[in-house]
Image 1 (cartoon, rainbow, N blue to C red):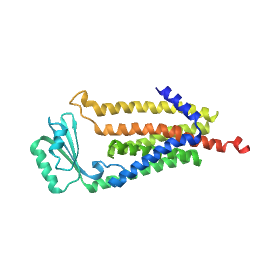
Image 2: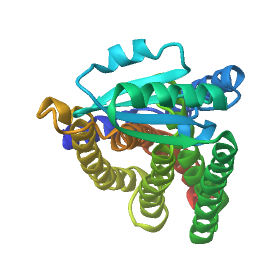
Image 3: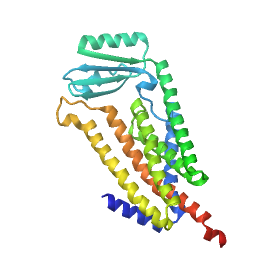
Image 4: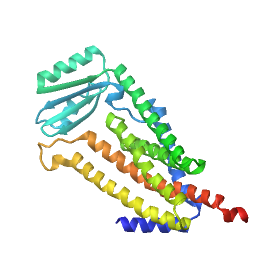
Length: 300
């Protein structure tokens, strides 16, 4: 599968000029920006915020009732989600005032045993939002600084940064489309995505700028190595997603690990976007840069 993907992608890159290679990732990037802008206009944030960031209450109870029946039972409260986790059902509610909160807790504790209640206030959620934004921005700026120090050339460095930035934007847009909320887990996934993206982009840029051979040969060799790395990671993430999402199908005592499920699916889609951005966007920019600065072209 890896060999087939590499050969197909390599053939596509060789048959299309730089402008054609840039068209697809730029179009996807623009569509992703539109998705984020629409979400921002609708909710006040570019991505849908999870309970950690907007506040709310999460209640876990041990019961034989289905998640759907519990969701219907508490529909008068600001319920967001109810899902089964083995022998327990986890219910998530949005922010509510103190009186409603106490009524809900009294109702839950009177109806079920082994109740676990976790509440996050709106002020604490706002503080977490700021910390998450700072973490992503500082990580991205640190990555950009290291890239510029390594290559000391504007176009290749900008190509690496642009590819990583596009990966994050596309992954965030996918979260909105798939209904995945921004949580501490998905923030971690976006931070990991920066590292994965830079890894493949630096591999490509180093091979093209510092190895011998024609540009096409260097791109092909880098692609074989890079695609193997990425598909290996994708295979591991797919297994993690299946196990964390559908483990309850094997045994009802096994819970659904929603955080791992969200992390893995965001990384899967982000790495799929990285394949496009690295081998189309970054390759097109690098090939244009090398052709523009080649001594043969300057003599002509």
